[in-house]
Amino acid sequence: MNDKSTQKKEGHIKPRLRFDNLGITGTQLSGGVITGKERNPELFGESWILEAENMLMTDPTIRKSWIMVKQTLLSATWAWESANQDDEQCNQLAEFGNECFGFNGYAGMMDKSFLQQLEFLVEAFPIGFRYAEELYHVAPDKEGRVKVWLKEFADREPSSHMKWLSRDDQTLDGVLQKQVGIKKTPRPIPSNKLLLININQTGSNWAGVGMLRPAHWYWATKERVSNLLLIAAERWSVPTPKIVIDRAGKQEQGYEDTDINEMIDQATVQAKNFLSAEQQYLIEGEAVKFDIYAPAPSFESGPLQIIERCNTEIMSAFLTEFSILGQTSTGARSVGEIHNSTFRRACITLLNRIADQISGVDREGGGTIGRLIRWNFGNIPQSSLPKLRHYGLDTDELAESLQMLPALVTSGLLTPDNTLEHAIRDRLGATQLPEDEQRTAQERKLPLSPVGGAMQLAEQIMRKKKNG
Image 1: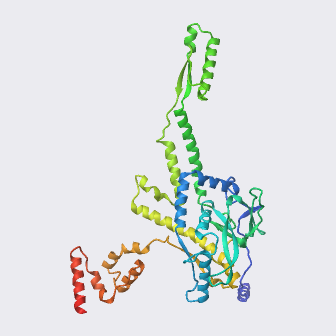
Image 2 (image 1 turned 60 degrees about the vertical axis):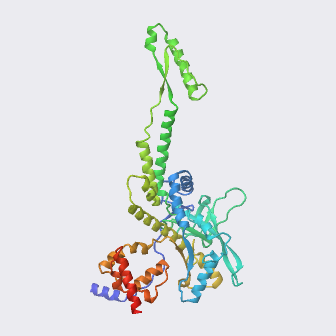
Image 3 (image 1 turned 90 degrees about the vertical axis):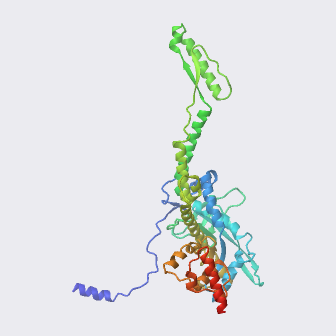
């Protein structure tokens, strides 16, 4: 009875959509500072920013690895792409974006080029985050119609960040910077006037987790080992004076303890002065002689191996291990190509992060193009907004596939017909062959040996001429 009534009751239950939030992000905010995510209390907030900037400025391996990533990111080309090439309004919106940002031949409506601003936007990735304040201005477009344009992404350095503003500790409402100097007191920047670039954000952790974080332990270890190695080198290059005392022998010769102690005190004073460079000679006594203590450091063993290992781990954090393949006893070109391909794909992912933040609807910390289009064109469906794209970092799939073409043709899995040839020539930028020079699939399958290939091609040309 209960089962039937339950089934009957459940049969009358109508499914409904739940638009309210039932859970939380799980991120802890204390006074606008994200806590709990970082287990090391010395490496979150302002302390982490200062430590990360110090790592970038002082460590050559970190600097080299980041420069490799940064220069690869800056080598990309950008353009706003229409959401629908067949829709006139979508094309107009994409053209507006290109005119604003200076893409596709436009001079741009911003005070600085996008590349100049990209140079500091990508600095978010080693630290974890970086934000810029959007500044706007009004000016006529190429047709003389007045529009609202993006003036620049005004950089706001992470070292000036004070706290994240959130009314519910879940949603980003803005940021507040600390006062630097006495000329101007910063005001809160609302989130819809903010371009926030971060990496590895989870929940409400808007500070993200930077590429330098997993490298920090190895950087700190290398610092300690390097300092100890320098101390050993100093002790070896500037020997420590050693006082050799012959108390028993001098007592047998009739010296009193007071006389011997006085000689030791004088020798001690000379040794101290010698180390401080105030005296460059030593006077030996009857009961004391001078020697040196200078153990030679082992530069080729432990310390240098530790430093080398730390450098390798640091490069792993940036995926730049392939940069030292020529300096080691192992490694091949094929291995380097695999590493390079992985590295470039990681760089593509980083650029996608920037493109996604600038694209899209008006929202907290992003949607620059959505704001500009709404102010100039009114409410536009999200599906009609243009998409910011980057080009130039994708791997050349054509070059990789051409190496496999002979095997695929020989095995019969691929037919070398005119359609395939047209596709390859299009990718290479070559003009299409006229009809009288085109070949059949059978003619393309003929082996092209150094001698036989030339003869076969000649026969094909003669046959075509006869048929023509």
